[in-house]
Amino acid sequence: MNFKKILSNIVEFYHDMGTVNRENATHILEYEIEEIEHIFALLLFGSFTGMPSPPVHITLQLLPLMEKELELMFTKVATAHDALGEITSVLGEV
Amino acid sequence: MTHLAKLQVYLVKYKGVKLKVIFFTGKGGVGKSTSSALFAYKLAKSGKKVLLNSIDPAHNLHDIFACKLDSIPKEVITGLSVMETNLDLWVKKYLMATEKEFKEVYKYQEAFNLHKYFKTLKYSPGLEEYAVLLALQDAIDRYSDRDYVIFDTPPTALTLKFLALPSVSLLWLRELVKFRQMILNKKDIVTKIKEGKRGIEVEKDPVLKRIESLIKIYQNLSDRFVDSKNTKIVVVMNPDKLSLSESKDIFTRVKDLDMTISYVILNKFTGDETICKTLEKEFKGTEVLRFPKNENEIVGVDCLEGLDLTFDLKRLED
Image (cartoon, rainbow over all chains, first blue to last red; front, side):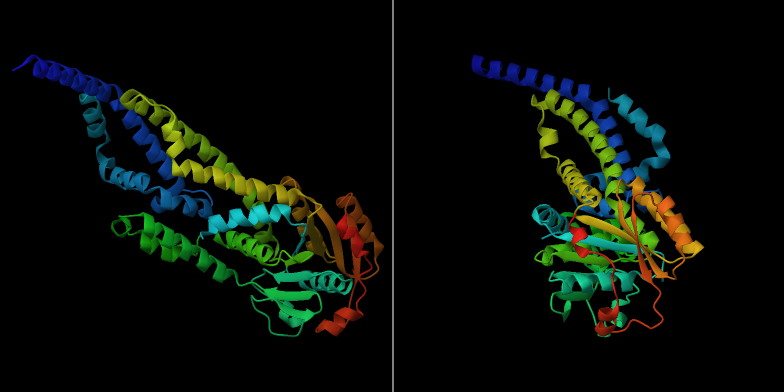
């Protein structure tokens, strides 16, 4: 193994270390963002799940742009019964 | 073009247009259609170009003008065109456009079963007043060459909801924009840590952009509604307690929305000045116009010709 190869492996190692650390640093924040996005979607599309919602024309005008949030909202419905499990899985990764 | 884009184009146009919009409102059966028809007729006779548009689902104008009317304006005399807007059609058109946009964007809509939801959306509360707004937009957009567009509105409840629509929407949108900003700020922190760049989340977020453009639209509409020089609200009432009570309610609600009632028309006036004194006390600063009781049915243009308006139409320019 020549010197160049060793150097490139070291650089790659530090780069990966940095990525892992950044992932760890942002993981809880990303989870929080996901939760707020979920609340934002619920606030807008609450009528889908029986909650009071804003004037229907506002909902409809934002609906086509919110695929991700809507998908998240439906995923949350599936995981809602196991909130504790979800929190421990988030904390477990830190 | 989507309804939103049309609304934006219309607002740019609407701002530059000098056309005056008059809404005739009041309790059911007080004579809104007759009063609006008389105003429209006399304005046209004075040389103005007028469009009279009924947005009341229970249309009366075809009876007054004794001819068949639909959503295409019909010229009844020189300078006066009359139309009856089909609000259900506007709801349908709007939902179809949204569904189309929705289908183009969403990949998983079949899995969500949201297409079924669209079928029932037409019964959603709030869509009817939005349809009124779209009908208003369309009428002004198409007929901006007129001097006046006069709307014969549905009974009080729907009209008040329609007039309140811009400010209610603004309340929601201002909260939503704050919420969205909070999400984007947090996302921005994540992007900064991971990629070393800031500000890109806010820049590229289409939802925030749409909320901001909606705020602009409703702010413009709200400004337009409170501009009493170009938008006049006329309350029509009869000399009876029920009608007076509802007119007082309209007054309070319109005032809450920072709008002004330009005139009160006391229709079927019998000559009893006591009620006029009550009105002048209740509606301080608003002129009360007296329309005498007419024993004969008002059917046909000739009947309108025979009626006296007792109002100087030039004052509508103020």
